[in-house]
Every structure is written in C-alpha cells, then in structure tokens.
Amino acid sequence: MDLKSTNGSLVVADPAPITKSRLGAYSGLMPYSQSGQSFSSNIVTVPRKKPGKLDDVCSNGWLDAMISSSPPRKKAHKDFNAFDIISDEADVAYQSWMIRYPSALKSFQLIMDRAKNRKLVMFLDYDGTLSPIVDDPDRAFMSNEMRSAVRSVAKHFPTAIISGRSRDKVYDLVGLTELYYAGSHGMDIMFPARDTVSPNHLNCVKSTDLQGKEVNLFQPASEFLPMINEVYRTFVEITKDIKGAKVENHKFCVSLHYRNVDENSWPLIAQYVHDILKDYPRLRLTHGRKVLEVRPVIDWDKGRAVEFLLESLGFSNSSDVLPIYIGDDRTDEDAFKVLRKGNRGYGILVSTVPKESNAFFSLRDTSEVQDFLESLVRMAQQDAKGL
Ligand SMILES: O=P(O)(O)OC[C@H]1O[C@H](O[C@H]2O[C@H](CO)[C@@H](O)[C@H](O)[C@H]2O)[C@H](O)[C@@H](O)[C@@H]1O
Image (tube, rainbow, N blue to C red; front, side, top):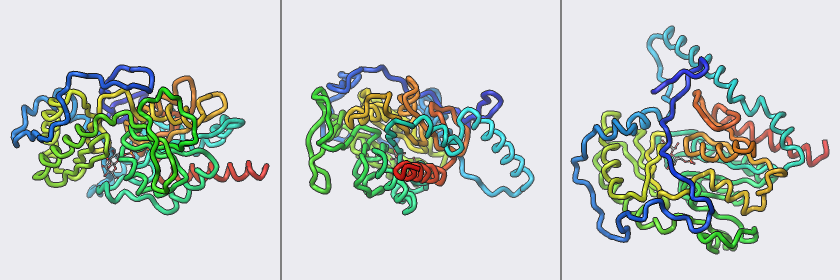
C-alpha cells in the first residue's frame, strides 16, 4: 500500500481521480466525446487472450490504484511483538488523522447545533457504509439492526441511498420503501412523481415503482445502455479463465472485481480492461474498493446526484437544509465535495485507515454508522416530544 506522510500522520494515498470538465446544467447532458464508435453493434469484440504491453497500466497508475484501493485485511502475525508495534503505530496514525477528520459520534452535538432550525436530509452509500465489505458482492447484506436504524432515520428525515450498484440491486439489499434510491453512481434516480422537478430535466421520464406508484426516473446515461451491455459481455468473456474475477452489470456501469483474484493476475486484468477501453472513448474507468468500474463519460457522479435530489425534493435552499452524506469510497468523494463547497452540509467518511478526503467528519466502520443513525433517531424523538 502506498502510504504518505501528511502533517506527521500516515495517510493512504488515493491515486488522482480521472479528471473531467463540467458541463453545467442537468438537462441535455452530452457525452464528452461524440466521436466514439457506434455502440449499437451486436458483435462483441473480445481481445483474444493476449493483452497489450503491461507497461501501459504500470505507467498510467492503474496498477498502483488497484493495489491501494482498499485497506488490507488484518492478518494473524506469528511475531506478536512486531504485530503489536505495527498496530500501535497504526493507532497513533489514525488518532492524529482524526484531528483533521473528527469522529461524527464525538462531534454529534456540534452537528446537531448546526442542524437547529434546518431540515436534515440524509444521503447514505451502501457497500462499506451500511453493509461491511465482504469477499462476495452478492452476500453484502446489511444487518436487521442496521435496516431498522435506516428505517427509523427515514421516518424523521428525507433519506436517500446513492450506490454504485444498480438501483434494483441496492433496493433488493435494503428492502425499505421509505427511501429514495439512486443506483449506478447516481445515474439512475427514482423519486416520487409528486415532487417538483424542473421541466429542463430532459432525461426525466415517468414510470411506476414496484408497488405500482407513479414515480419519476432520471437516467442521464440512458443512451449508453447498449454500450454498457456490450462491455459487460466482453468483460465476462475475458475473465472467464481468471479465477476469482467477478463482473457485475449495474445497468449504467460495469464492475470488474479483482478482490478474490491472485495478485499476480491483477496486471493482466488491468491490461485487458485498458485495451478494451481503447475502443470505447465514451467510457471511462474509476477505481472502487478492489473493483474496476467502467462508466459513461458524462458529467454526472454521486455529487451531482445529491444536488439533483436536493432540488427535486424541494430542498435546494441551502439556508434551511442541512444535507449529510455518509460514504466510504472514492466515488463518495464527489458528494463530499458538493457538501463542502460553500459549507453546505457535512460529508462523513467511513474508514478504518487514514485517508485524504473531502469529508468533514469520520466514522470507523458500519457499526459506528449504525450508532450515528440511532443517535439521530433519538434526537428526533426527543425533539418531537419537545424535550
Ligand atoms: O457505492 P456503493 O454502494 O458503495 O457500491 C460500490 C461497489 O460496492 C460493491 O463492491 C464493494 O463491496 C463488495 C461487498 O462488500 C466487495 O466484495 C467489493 O470488493 C467492493 O468493491 C459492488 O459489488 C460494486 O459493484 C459497487 O460498485
């Protein structure tokens, strides 16, 4: 792992995000490149087994990003003294990092003071925030206690889940009808039809939810569906002989997991993906936790999704609203940035290791997230009783 020293504390160095320019308005979002190949073709061009030069992915930083993309698991160490020293050092580093990212639990009263006379709006990431990170993405279940905490929070405050997973998948995992859901890193947002939405939102369509209620759907990347499906099939094909690799189709983005792949094969995976993306200039790669994610090159991310939901739900007036976003991975940084800008609200980073972040506060793990949500509920109940 790449560790850097900042203000005397050890910090996990995230690789620089792949940068992009801003297009401005929500409506009529245009892909950056109009010159990409046509994506209606049914032919899946699978690079035949031999990927290009591995130097490509070494020099462009992909491999470093893959290696540093998730905290290492704690391994039992034969030499207990050495292990103790390492964990003491890690604790000191974490404590000094927390000076810059204080615990949201310890800062709870400060957050509540800021929330006074404001409407609190909650945004939650799913993996690593509501459910612990596990080896098998299909088994990333949230506990019943966490589910009930989220349900109670949603009773008191408008609450949305913004996930990299497809909207359907994250709904299946969470199973609560009281929430708003945004899947595919915010590229698939469902919100009630009754809520006002500017007519300029060209990518907004009427639909019905699973309960048959009329809803609005905002899908700014809908034209990319065939392209994403094509890349999904290609990834399935190239990884079929790579033990442990797993590909997920999240509708407007594709995930290629390498958490369970032997590290010696990571360069091969990186190079395959690199070679494939050369044919898709309208798609880009982002790094999640031991996962490579491919998504359309449009000016949309979890931060834009937060802004969109605030506006669509009628909470765009920042002076009487306090948005809070809790998330654990790099894709959540876009949302933290939006809230930090103009001191609009608070980002809370969930992390067991020091990390550079745009968040204001931190929580160590999902159990602290649950504590924080339960504290919010208690506070709302006391308020309701006029205590
Ligand atoms: O935005 P999120 O809700 O945090 O989703 C991000 C990705 O989460 C999932 O992968 C991560 O969690 C898995 C289960 O714990 C873990 O096995 C994997 O290594 C992590 O990267 C999901 O499977 C991805 O598709 C999401 O993009």
